[in-house]
Amino acid sequence: MTRTIRIGSEGTYLTLRALILRAPGQVTGLNVSYSAPDIAAAADLAFQAELLDAENLAWFFEEMARNWRGWNEPIGFRTSEGDFTLSADCDRIGHVTIRSRIITRRWSLDGRLHLEAGMLEALATTARRLLLPADHEAR
Image (cartoon, rainbow, N blue to C red; front, side, top):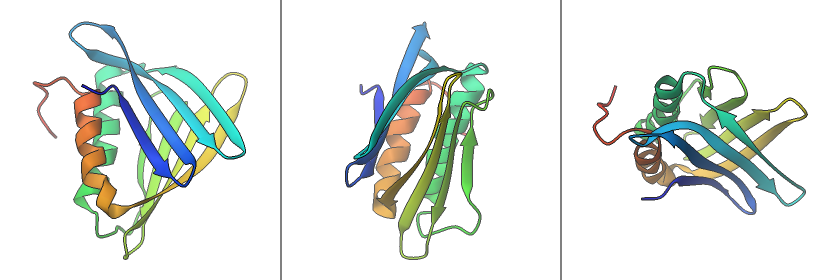
């Protein structure tokens, strides 16, 4: 099973790698990396509210997939510590923009990614498999 989600296109990517430090496969945080032609950065971010943060991040991807034809208000995710946020907008023709923010003690990075609505279902499925235990019930 993959332990990575890679989002983006055209040389700009956000990669989320699960940090699993406890059995049975509970995701306790993420290694988040952002790369673009002019910048690259990465940070390990611990989930303070482990299952809640993992559920909320999975929900973020699932909510985009459910509304693949576009939505009116941004869809967002924020870790309980506020050190990683995502916000997504989608227009009526299926262009999705995801804004990310990574905050560490020494630096912060704001990024922007673009993808097509047709990618959202596979992204949501991958996120659920990566972030949640197999026996976890959907919201």
